[in-house]
Length: 264
Image 1 (cartoon, rainbow, N blue to C red):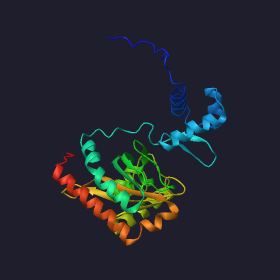
Image 2 (image 1 turned 45 degrees about the vertical axis):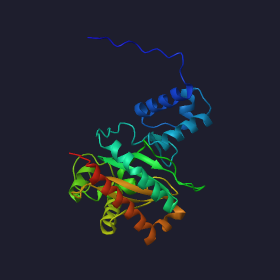
Image 3 (image 1 turned 30 degrees about the vertical axis):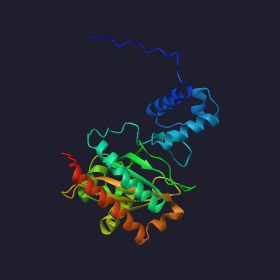
Image 4 (image 1 turned 120 degrees about the horizontal axis):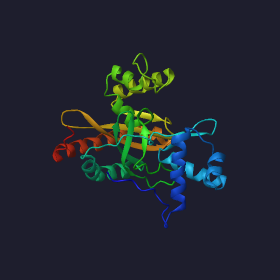
């Protein structure tokens, strides 16, 4: 059996990358860290540690609570998508996403659900000066995403209870009772409307709407989202904006049919 060699620090090591990776190790091993502790461990200034942690939050590898401590985010330990059709979906959806972005002048996302997580496959940013940024490669909790809520709404209530270990579902709860009740409220609204609304669920000041993308059988396999600063969310909820999103989703559904995407 081949022996694993002890890893040596590369001569071309990139300090900022190494520091970010060390922060990931700290989050993994210690579960909660403060900026001052991170700075001391890395031997950098507090401002540098804060910037590094902010990037981990942005990419979903860390979250911050009210006490200003940082905890592992949903991207740490997230299961891979592990399907071959996402590349086709991303590439062939691009022109329809571009058209929708230009129509609404807001950022458009494409994502798939893996368990209780949403994996963002593609983002096309708005050109507005104040806009929602690029989430390509990010992993967010499904119950904190407009597209995630829409895809969760396709499941039975009992499946949701088992997934989150709540409301008698068994297992260790991943959501508190209050959080689960809020999720079910959002899921019920999504089932009624045919789309889901995210009102600052993942990030203060950010709103979004999410629409399902379906196979010819009707099964939802992905979500199309339009995200905006919260003060522009009401504009996205106007009938003309909703119709533009529905039209874009329908065009992508047609592409899925033409491309013969197989998720079996």
